Figure 1 (tube, rainbow, N blue to C red):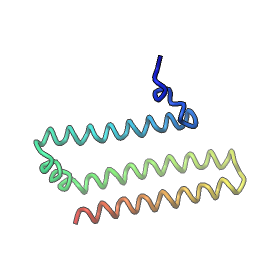
Figure 2 (figure 1 turned 30 degrees about the vertical axis):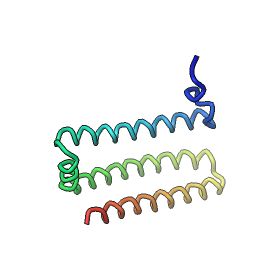
Figure 3 (figure 1 turned 45 degrees about the vertical axis):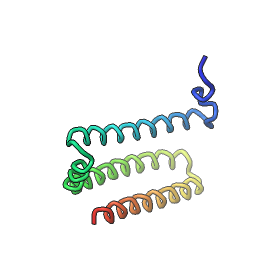
Length: 116
């Protein structure tokens, strides 16, 4: 018999469970990448130095990820707007797009300020 917390009944639905699992997987991969990098370079100080030396390439990588995500968003938006042609869907998308753009700009600005 499984423990109650493992059955995930506290989640509102299957989509929430899948999103939670994806978020946990992304965090686990990020932690693993950092641990491997620290192990390969020998110390946190050297890992930090390597990250600073590679900042331009990491920025290019993030821009590529943003571009792919943006392309996927446009593709998804077209499909959903065709399925829901009323004006409320457009307003929801606009709010989400503005929030995402503000979040990305804030993230990149914080990274830029940390680099100085």
